[in-house]
Length: 456
Ligand SMILES: [Fe+2]
Image 1 (cartoon, helix red, strand yellow):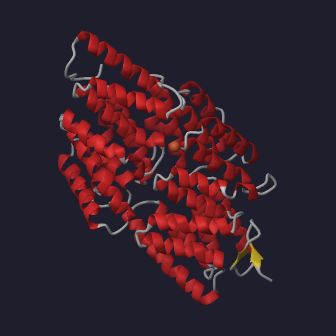
Image 2 (cartoon, protein in one colour):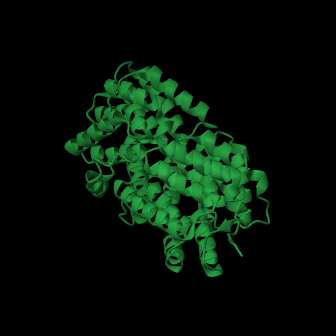
Image 3 (cartoon, rainbow, N blue to C red):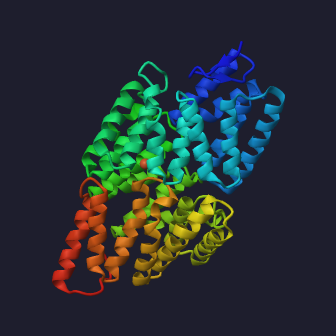
């Protein structure tokens, strides 16, 4: 008799124990639990012929967004193909494998669409849902993230085991498409159904960020440790969100303490962890805070990644760290790599390197060199395609802040004001950052029109 997974869909496993381990892995992946790697290993050890588990391993490696992980994903793909040869695969499982193949071939968008098509055919499959969500997220395709989930939402009722996590994903898509009130409701519903839904907790934190509710954001995260205590490195990202709220409130000591004791307590080299850290240090410096020697350990890691070019979002954060530590040669090497990737057109991410990565890289470099007018113009080009680099509005905001700062320091106060007003329009409300910048521009205009050398 065929074995089924927690969604009631057939899986090609040898016995019920493997099916049970697989269910544990799915729950761990959707809750961002640090137990996921061990559960995946246990599943594969128990049944090396389970091709979907090898395929999932390959997709997880690709989500890590690093060149050496692509090689590991290729190996997982080979294992999946061999396992399929021995035990076969269902049509649903084959959808995952095809998605992995497309992504390994550089066709990231097609990979996301394949996962989405698999979800559409098997709408209760919350693993396909979460994977499609994750890849669309890396592509900055917020509307696709939302459409993908809303097409199957009616297949998930509150009695099903993964429904909470599905609402958590839905909440994030609502937030990223600007429907903040609905996002807050969906995220809170998700946590009622799944207390450990860290993604839902995080989605609501995004709502507070985008709607300028920093005090609510601090309280929201502080009061719910049970929702993210179990997390893998995603917990650093939750701490990062809390630090953003403190920064918006002007509580710089709190931000630096979180940076040292939580966000960079482990010197990990996952691109998402480095991005949290680099983004926060950059924002602190834009607020004229001395961050001391904190750039150095980040720059050491990023110097080894100047030729990575797997994910433009990651490359731009590596660049922030290299420029932050004044490593001009390594920074220039990284920008050359991004530009070369943009010319080779071997995959979807190379196109992003050309349209967004190259001008952003030039703009960030010009900003560090003090060429503010050039920086303003280059960052303007990059920011026009900014969402293509993926990530969230909150994450990409660091580049928009540097753009505003370049305008101010170039004496383009009207342009800076326009950028800030656009930023408020995109968001739900004015935040502390915008209020401080607009007040500064007003003061600067009253005192002396013209170039402004420093934020004060
Ligand atoms: Fe986030």
